[in-house]
Length: 233
Image (cartoon, rainbow, N blue to C red; front, side, top):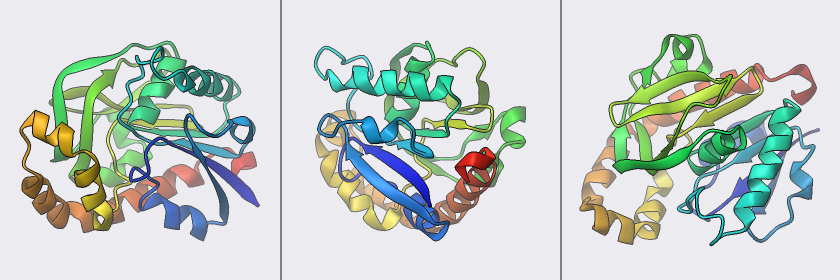
């Protein structure tokens, strides 16, 4: 049986539409809570998925668990073990690979399509072309050495990168299950108020784009999983 460890930072930012796909493909899922659970199970697992959250990669003095997560990712990426990072998870991957993560100069919150690079057009992200995906971040990563930049948006030059077939980092949230989006709006109520964003606008976007995003993201993740090294499939 294939084993996947999921590192979760906040309850409502979960696997979303990626979970039923993994279960259908026979993956056994083990969810770890960042800052609470030991990371031993993540060392040699067939697949590690690091999810999003409101903590900054640069807050290591305030949240010491971040150093352990980065060290774990350094070891896995060095050994070319299959690893997927989403939002904060992507930023942690970038930092583990020596790249800077810094405030991007403003919040990017809402649904918008990705602009795929030539590499992105040849990657699993092609399934997302023209599909508005959820963006929710105020920091961004630089491109690590040896990584392939796959996508951007006008507000964020580095939206996704890959390394070989084993590592994929996504600044955006293609995994969003729009049926659970109200949990995001409740959980991030203070951030939305500070950014001057009306939750009703985001609700309307989720109703409009949720179904096509779910279909496109499932195709994208399925493509990526099928291309993992043989010993992880």
